[in-house]
Length: 94
Image (cartoon, rainbow, N blue to C red):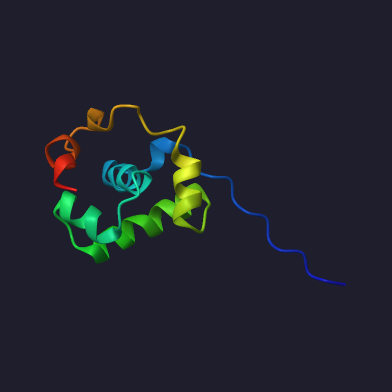
């Protein structure tokens, strides 16, 4: 008899993502690379990768695409709505 896989945990509600995790997810949704996101947010690519790991766990996904799809309904239409986001000022830089 095969062992069934453990049940997946339900995805965390969007409020559990930190402000920085939401920023990284927004830039990811725009198709930016880890390097691009790091440049815009003024952090290292390793830090971007760690934020993405946390996002994947919290959203219950395993890929960048799945994170974007799961997060699409949660991201505000106005990327600049998040306080502290460098999105507006840096958007033209990428």
